[in-house]
Image (cartoon, rainbow, N blue to C red; front, side, top):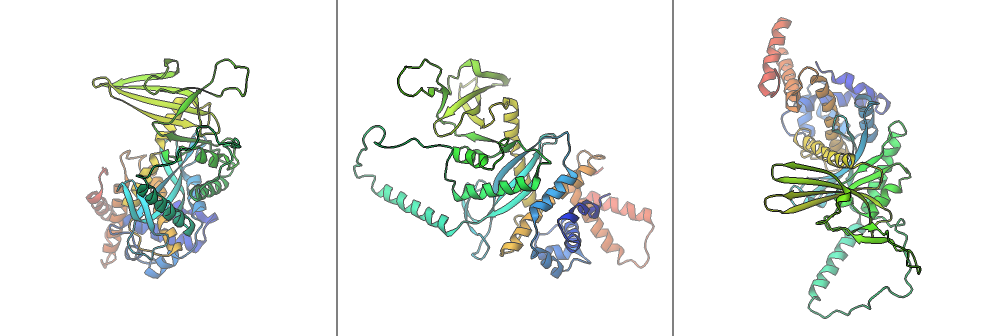
Length: 451
């Protein structure tokens, strides 16, 4: 039913025949194994042709993983009638010890605190038609000594401020300092973190080329600022726009529409947006589900920290029983993007979280025990490669069984492994019909949605 070898033949342009052979053995083992995904575990499930030394050679081979991911995605998932957006997010893998390359303390949203581990930033292509995310580029975040030094200085300054809170502070003179000049908000100094993200984004755009036109990059609320917007614009593609989220108390302003006073520079900022009383002229849609009313507003607004106008969508939810209100502010640098697509594209960003879940739960993102740079890179990218290859295999199976999932896929390959090892012990090979019946029976043991 499944042919892994044929699925990997598209990688001949970016991998050697030896590496493809090793990858075929490792992928088959990963699809069948039940233990932790380590090099030793893979070698035990790989059987013939997959010794520990072979697995070790593969993990120590430098591989251009971004090209590998792109070849697989381009061959199996791209279609002319689909629209793709690119999304980025960071995932943290907890690790102990001190020898692992890039180990540091990173904030984890799962633990809601900084934890010791390694962090990886991922860019993923998301199909708006199939609503599925395909990991494209994964790179480890390694903090330099300069960044660590800056963080320690900031913490020291914060401690000094806390100690000097009781002391009276000198008040600065009101108004703008004498001799200060206007700053061009389009010229910003990117932080080392944003420079790292920008270098990844440029590499992604270079690998994809002109064959797939990407118009929107979707990032979470941590990138809802002018520096992140300028980072995207500095990539040199005018058609690439950012979609992100602003803080709920962001100071947004309407453009000034009054008369010119006749003196000085024309006024730029009008009234500030009152989120409790947004003009109904900008209301686009109202829906109600039980006692929750949802109102969607769209308008072009200004923010004093941004260099350009923003296409803003405000989603206001009201509890009609308690009259409690809450709102979310999404924005895009594309002023012509309709509110429906802006909301839909931002909600699709969450598909990348399912990639993180599958990579950790099934394909060893949390299990690897490598400590050097190249083996870690290969282990992490292999986990995300398995996410893509499993999508390709599951998509084939869902033509016959729409509910087929990862557990069913692993049950299928595990049954094949058990049957193969059992048949090797039998002196005479049984009848093929009996073998097929045994295989189907074993497959049902670990599957969920197999008929």
